[in-house]
Image 1 (tube, one colour):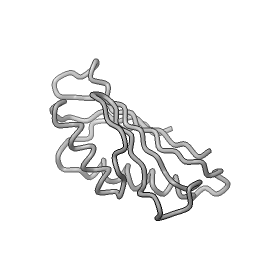
Image 2 (tube, rainbow, N blue to C red):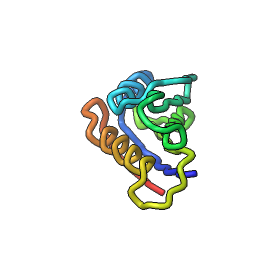
Image 3 (cartoon, rainbow, N blue to C red):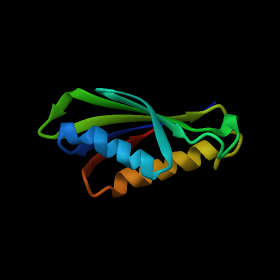
Image 4 (cartoon, helix red, strand yellow):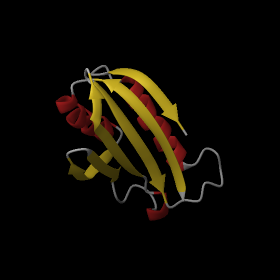
Length: 115
């Protein structure tokens, strides 16, 4: 299973973060399949690619540590594809989402830690 994670600290009003994150994921061609107060799950649209390459994104918003409109966001991007190549489908989608988050003018990216 391919799996890529990163953590962000963004400067944005906590109430605005979830709608903005959903908008960002939708701009990357993901559909939200589940959402809660501090959690979003989205996946690529079915039918575009093979099921094993279908990428899922989990967004965890840490509202308990939000200070002065700075919010910690953890992102997990994964699929069932074996990451035999460095530039696999999951890695490509991970890079696309990272770029969309970094370039979003609706918030200020303070910190990005990728693992």
